[in-house]
Amino acid sequence: MKKYINTLVLFGSLAFLIMWIDRVVYAGEELKYNYFFLMFAIAGLLYYTYRRGLDKMKKDEEEKKNTKQKPKKR
Image (cartoon, rainbow, N blue to C red; front, side, top):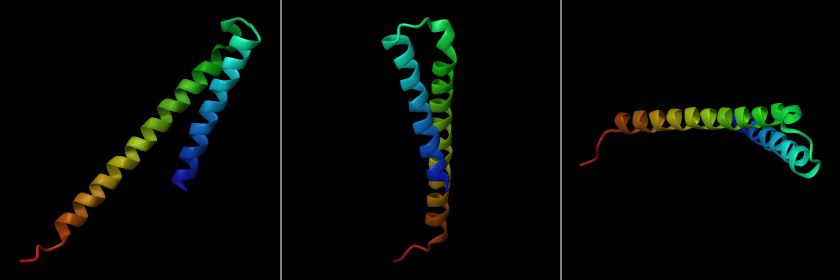
C-alpha cells in the first residue's frame, strides 16, 4: 500500500510540474497566476523524497535487527 501512495504522490507532483510548464512556457501566462502549480510540484517531490527516506531507514533497521538475531555458525 505504501508503494502505491508513493507512486501517486510522485506522479501527482510531476503532473503539477507539467501543468506549470504548459501554462508558463507554452501558453505565455504570467508566473504569478501559476505559482501554486510550481509550489505543489516542489512540495510533492519533497514529500515523496521524505517518505522514501523513511522507508529506507525502516528497511535498514529491520536488516540490522535480523542480522543481530541470527546466531553465527562456526
